[in-house]
Image 1 (cartoon, one colour):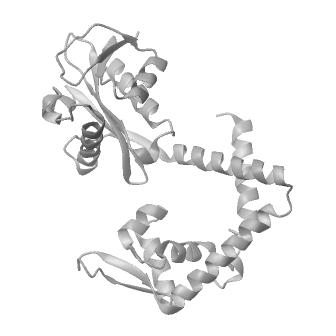
Image 2 (cartoon, helix red, strand yellow; image 1 turned 180 degrees about the horizontal axis):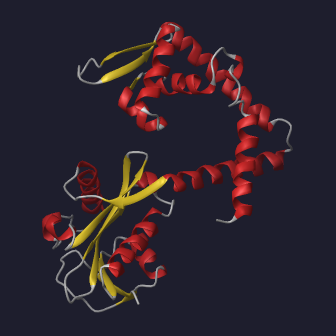
Image 3 (cartoon, one colour; image 1 turned 45 degrees about the vertical axis):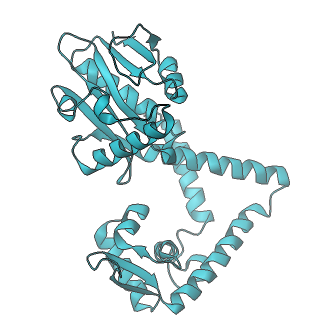
Length: 293
């Protein structure tokens, strides 16, 4: 651990929480703390499913329930079954809640401007650019990568999105059944499937086949458009290589389509070299390999 870097992060956290009023019991001069105001904001004029709020705010179910009860008690929120599906619980703002939401919206603008108004024009530009960069990097730090059975719902959601994107980008469309890999090849010891998540949302996946006496093979590497630019693809690729090396593979290879220019750039920058075709994948135009020694 680099002590100097940790100290910078902690100092930044202290400054931000104080400046935005996160420590105040009356956030934005209202009679509730930040957590309650943030939840009210996220419910919004259109309402929201309770499960979606948990994911969006990354809150424990018990804590979220307590916050909702407080807002219900204040007459700002109404919680009940969804009109379309009685099994789904939703939260909606009451008339008083909508008025409070509009007030919070205006005061949030005022708080943002209070951060900017003392600064010169160039300082405002620097600050907002730095904020955008910090937000981007914080999102990258929230991504976690771990193994997942290819039959699990998160994995299936990734694979469906992967197939839809390839079908749209490939000149001849895409049929997963013709790509030469089955689920049983992506389960240990034959292989491994990884999923990248932010909170509980799956934002990427990748797999590696581990055939005996052959190079390992990378398959199904995909990142959601919502997570691109966060380095998720490189992290997935690096972890797949690490897992292949741990399983005894001395090299790894892959194939890709000419339409996937971003993937080709990633592979080349990660040390892959182009090789002659090693399979008959009808969707492949380029074949790459990399030593794991």
